[in-house]
Length: 265
Image (cartoon, rainbow, N blue to C red; front, side, top):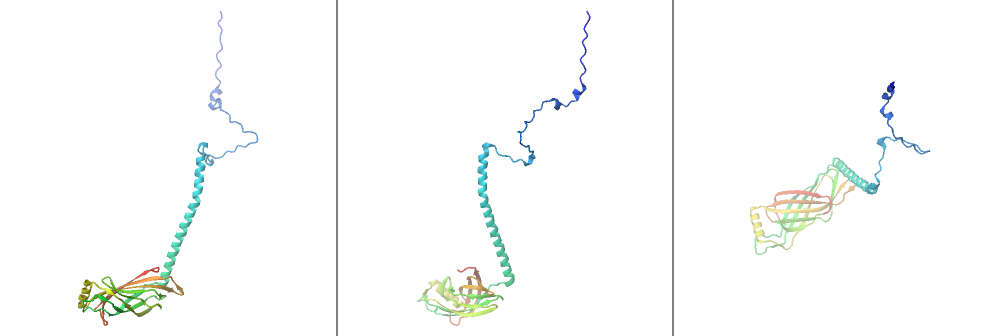
């Protein structure tokens, strides 16, 4: 029997091997947009993401809270800015004032003390009614600043923390570059001394060195040009030493210090 000859399989087509795999794979086609619509392609970095529905209420709550805080923050920033600006303006004004007027503190000193009403020869009566006539020298060294000495001043002379007498200073105006010397009368009544203080005064008078304290407090106003400031309190504390408690007493030593408060005390 004659054998059948089967034809060989035809050689594979060369082009089937050169075809790209992507062309043989089935790729799902994108659904076509509805008729009458446009497809707009946006860069990825310009896409604004929307929170998922389950977090949408949290986002809205946070946005409302942030919106409420913004006005407060702006108001606080404005207030802080105004405060800083005022501080800077004040510092600049103070610097200009100092450079133009060169303000200096007034100087005070006690020139003379006359004493009556203190008798240290008898220890039977320790109640005193002293009288002091104190001469004070006030110097205004400023060339462009005048000083108004207002009413309401006080002057006190003390020894061992016991006030012996008190009085007031006269009210007057002291012009620029001026020295004014004035006398004030101080009186005390019914001052009771302890035996210790009385004996101490006797010993100090024998030595010719009796320390006394003199405190002045006076309201003043500063005049700069035609402008007068508010009331400032000037405080003067002097430590003086006299040789005896008599009419003709002499000042052995003296030292005075000045302090200013920018408001009425």
